Image 1 (cartoon, helix red, strand yellow):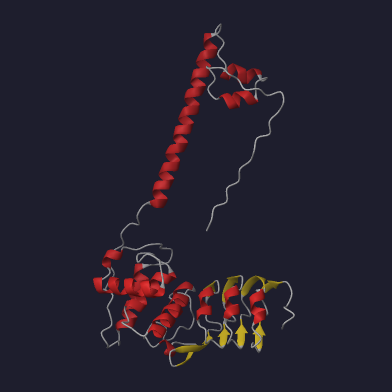
Image 2 (tube, helix red, strand yellow):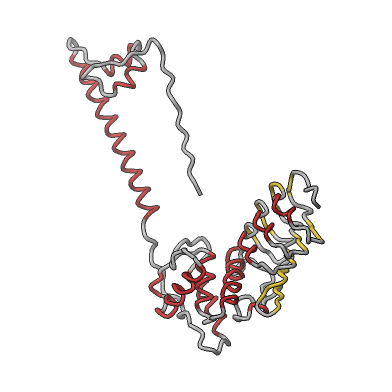
Length: 308
């Protein structure tokens, strides 16, 4: 999210000369209109006409007041954008760290996470989090190299908070659960998914709807026509063993992530019936193992790679 500044240069004219007048309020502005009688009247003092000086003084005061008002507005706007979020009320129940018996705990934790970050929220009051959850979050964040603050309402933070409640210790399981949870929170899983059976209801992510595994390794992710929104997450390429990625019939927008080209074991890729734009990433053409591709009913442009 960057801001692009546009700077326009002022073309100089041969007949414009600076006005070295100590009684000029804004020399550059006066210099632009040196030959203009009205500007001379406002900007230059005529010693023989005291009324002219009064007009000049009044004009300078008005200019300074306008500049001061603009600075005040800018400071006010800056203060609003950078101020700390208003602390929310405490959730209806605390987050729990799983102690082996997961029945009923996961659903409660997922609901609480949604309470902390209702739609449109950017931050929440992290003082409501139990210290055990905070310590678990910090440990997982360090292991997974996640830098999102614990009080931010990002998919990364919410996913990591959920993982922090499970007590899972196996490295592969931690990584896969985090990535799937980030997919869930980042594509409207808590509010828009039509079929999210099992998701975040158990730490065994292989029981989540559309997820197929061998051991802790995810081989297939099928979320066809499930109401997913936003953009296709680039972090899906971390599922190195993935053979099927079926995301057709959702509401994805934007370009297809080039990182998906690193899924060397991918055999099927279906992103049909979305609103994908742009061109096909050239990185995808490097995977010669793909047997089925479906990009139909999108807004993709360009040419199909000759390697296919």
